[in-house]
Image (cartoon, rainbow, N blue to C red; front, side, top):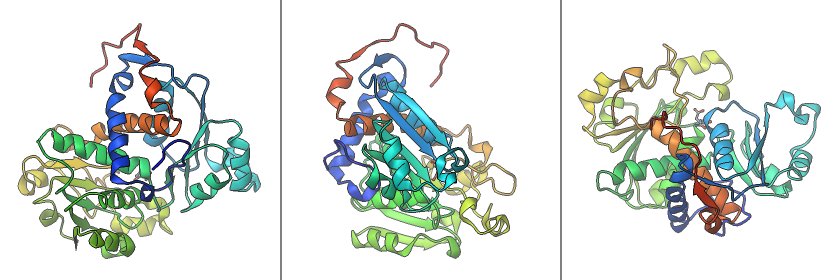
Length: 338
Ligand code: NCD
């Protein structure tokens, strides 16, 4: 894929070599993300960060990634504070905002909306989540995390055993992650959900078509007993007709330290795109896992900055200039812990 000037809308756009390129560039961003070095390569550039659905880590980490490359960030959050609430089309909003920005990140509740917006945009658009459809940057940071976690144990992504747990119907992160895993070899995927919240059939078919082993179950203990990664997800309550309907499924698959100790292999890595729903009736990943060294959820969020810096550098074609523009920081936050 030619990254320069491209929209990043779906994992479907990527080949395996593209993923390797993103990861290689992400690795090189560590000194800036850790604020040991400064680069001003994107000085003068503006990111339009447009989030029409709740977001904490995706919005802020895209913003931080752009700031760390020297650019400025402008944000719109929520329909009610934008002209979309006055009946403006995505087309017109895209024409206007792309005049103010060099790249746009967008999240929107409707599947396909970010692609529609991108068609009218004059600058590259990165999909920060479009309804239940896709969340490509999350899948990239998830796989980057998997690669790092397994790499430290001498393993690669090929041959991975992963359980995906929870709302697999509406969870866009697992949709993108499954598509991404189709670029790798010999993956064993166990899909754990209530039947009503099952992974969409076309995605299951796509995985089977490339030769992956896919099993479907409602049995959490059995599904997590022989995997490298247990990837939990939140019930996507905002996509249900009512909270009462979401309540039926909340808390169905809870993972805590006792269950982990009883059923998981010792080094099973626990992941979650976050936010984890920590309310008592959900509590899909218990706080008693916080001391478990295999809980990778906050390494995922840290890795998100590296991967998003890589995407900006590739799309804006400045990868080779990032380090030329670099210098050591004048001030280092020695109180910061990793
Ligand atoms: C996810 C999302 O928005 O799809 N969050 C995120 O971006 N890390 C998952 C979720 O909200 O449950």
